[in-house]
Every structure is written in structure tokens, then in C-alpha cells.
Length: 97
Figure (spheres, rainbow, N blue to C red):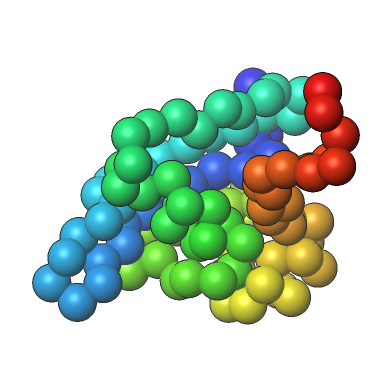
């Protein structure tokens, strides 16, 4: 069985009394593609911010190549090859098509 390149095990995130992520587990193998879909407010951005070191999980484990890691800052995440590319609406605002 191949080792996961990225895994989340029972990740939770709360902001004060508000629980925004509950028991998230993901297991991604090399070569797999993941699409993260959900309604507004479902926690997609919070999960991405945890993976990119902006937020820390309240509990749970992040594993890279099977080893537990702490992504305490965006720099720490980038040093491990994780970064966020933000969506920009109107990439070519002067083009008509």
C-alpha cells in the first residue's frame, strides 16, 4: 500500500465556541487529484488555511509523506511545498472574450 503524500487525521477547528471543522480525514496518494467542493460556509477556506499554515487545527494530525508535521506559518508550509493560489475574478479585464 502506497504511503500518502498528504493526510489529515481527525482534524478539527474551532473559533471560540464555534466549531467550523469537525473530524476531517483525507488521504491523498501520489498522482491523485482532489477537488474540494461545498456550500458557502462549509469550511473549505478554513481547511485550505490550515494546510497553508495560516490557521492551526484545534486538534488532529497533518501528515506529509507519512510523518506528522506542524504547519505553524505560511513559510513553514511553503518550505514543505504547500502554497495557496488565490482565485482572481477578471484575470484579463480589458479583453472582451
